[in-house]
Length: 285
Image 1 (cartoon, rainbow, N blue to C red):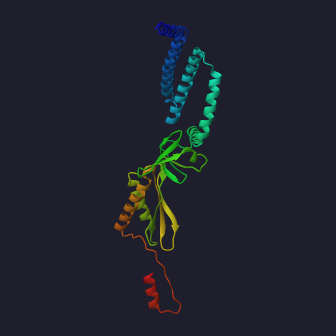
Image 2 (image 1 turned 90 degrees about the vertical axis):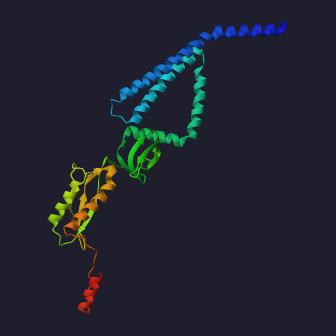
Image 3 (image 1 turned 180 degrees about the vertical axis):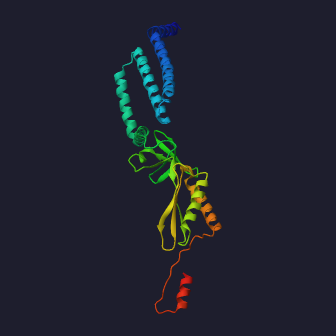
């Protein structure tokens, strides 16, 4: 019984001695960490508000704010560990070995991060622009450190890893696209009237932009028809819609004025054949 009492007394004495020796240091270390959390959070919010005044993409602002938070909190963490008397050199060496192993295991992820940083700072495209790359195209919806998301006109989404984007040929349409509609007219058509009607229909379309002005003109002289090119400027999301609307409106307007789209035809003359046979072949063509 006396031995147990002595052991308990010894434990109490040891705990009290450790508390007196390390308690103040531990308390100061905890206070330093709390101050680090508060200062880091305040600095992050301040950076976000300050960076809003600059013309930076949202991912860039978020990245810089996070870097500021990490650097500030790391400094307070080092101060806390030094206050406890922890040797930092062995700790840094151990973290370096762990970091090297993690880097080897996540090469693809790190490649996406490096490519994401290149996209964010080089700005080959921005959110809201229409791009075409690696066989995919669509409106840029989000740009993160790991991937870029495109939105199609059918509202589907395509997520492309950033490492697949950097180094590829990129076609950036911006926010506008020039549609290309072709109409065939007979050779005996009054071109002045037809072009005026088509130009009026193009300008009347609500999706067609007035600036830049749409282009309407003669494209080529075909075998059996004159081809008219219609190239209006539209917002990228309406690119496919406008083509169908213009085709319908132009077809109806031409029919109302008696202008019919010509059918492909060929004239074949048979040597030594009668005139009736030539007429029959021509009608069949």
